[in-house]
Length: 347
Image (cartoon, rainbow, N blue to C red):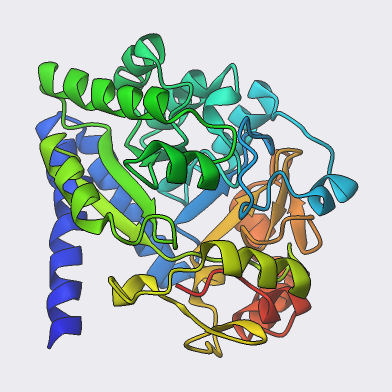
């Protein structure tokens, strides 16, 4: 019963965010675009979302994040996506997908054109979303994003205490991040804006496991639309067994305070997923475009090993339905690749 109630609540939330808020803002075309994208997903098996890696860089050096990890940059150099390339990608996907994540495993506000990127996608009736560490979310950036057409912004705040925050979000300044989040929320309320939806991500770990109620209170005080208490995840594709063992000792929560946010079992050998999934439905719903413009099958393909094609040079429907890409996708759906065996997306 609890599972069904959760699904009903989620459905109502999606309707509120994607239909009611758009109608409230007079953006009827976005509602129509949503329904058409879902129709094409159901009937023609097209994806309804795309992750666009606007860059593969970050100004933090978090120990559990794959972006600053040395292995990535051995295969892919740090890069910012060219704005014109980004626009061509949007033009090639806009007739099929509705949701565009303009970030991957990076800090999107580092990109000098990120506001224009959000605006261009929104002008094409797409729901745009970004996730930020909030270090660059100053008053000037807040004003720009609030008027960009951005659909959703997700704040990363993993503690309300300076020491645990800065240990987990290495390179970040706690006071700056907290102040920026509070200002954005206050300014959004002053302008009486429904968009962008403001959500908060709290990655449950050993350092913050006693702060769950505090972060819920913080979200309520700042009128944040949704709090996500997320699981601590380490991808075996980015970290070797020794690194996973060491990092889990430092950060793996040892209290089941929020059971849904505990996706691993820990033993003397390290971390093991609680559940083993035989299928990957996401590979048929969403795909990723790397900073160089290559479309890959999923967001955990950190190195670009499983490529569909160059997204700035081909219409999505044509690329999606190429025989080689269907074969690639079917194998990924059945978790046949080495990447799938080590995927960290187990939540």
